Length: 212
Length: 251
Image (tube, rainbow over all chains, first blue to last red; front, side, top):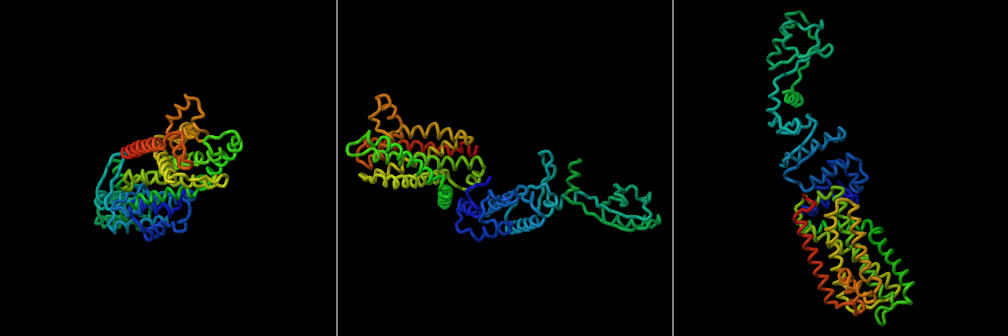
């Protein structure tokens, strides 16, 4: 996908020129820095690692500052630090007015970056809505409890959604139900050693969509 | 016009970066032809009066090198872009099909000119040549390189792999250039092969180019110019139509 004859900087300059942009060096330098390619600016693309080549492709896609940017799994195969840096860069581009279409297998990435999410199952769109609306579809809040003794009272069995070792998992529809759970534990004489409230994420929504 | 200039510059840089292969190598190969053929035939062949065989040979070799390298430039660049997939970076931007054509053909002319100049200057060291009609030399050089540049685009559009591309080069372009009167005057051929040579457009390129040096030629230089110009226009039109249609590029 790359031209073996040219360096990273040359390719970006050519790409700018094809779009009629002259003197794009400032933006090219910024792109190189944001994509952690500054040190490789004068290296031939054929000498770069797979991850770096992917970032060069991202830079080529962005070099003419397109109003709509399609990014196909831009953070696949990159390390955590660079992924965070790319996310920040993508968010900045979005704030500057670029519309970004992002495809990803990382639902965390979609949740952090996207205002609107489409979920696909076997080529069919199974959900298309704003991220907030999608998350609100999944009502369940998961409560993770460590009890002493390790025994879930009968009155709470209906809320149980599994057990993970010593941890009992309960599914609540509203935070207000938490008070009822604590009251039931007190009435049963069971002490609460640890409690964690887990909010639903896109992964939960996706799994629910796929199951349905 | 920035897009056109950028693509043209990129194509220039592409062959310049590998100039050992794209410039020096063809110059040396052509000079080997000159050394061998002039050594073997100098004493036995005189094609035109007052023009020795080595002098006769040099313009033909210059033109042959220019044509082959002009073809190689556009064809190798485009087929590589197709094979590696980076052609997409030239198809996505708002580059017009005529800009695409102009950049590739102009770069072919540039490479042909550089190689031709290299062969010509080295040949000059063997035999100082006169330039009877410099403008004719220039016109035939540009038209010849541009025609082969366009032919290179068509071939690389058609070819789906390097093997097919090499076949066009080795089985069409090279034989047509070798059998176009580079090493001989077609008047020395039997009538049948003279007629065949007249059907070879490369013959008119060589003959017209040589006329610019010596002021003598096998056919009228005006006829050669008309045929060469017609070939250039026909190939250019075909190339433009193919590029406009997206033949094997966008389809």
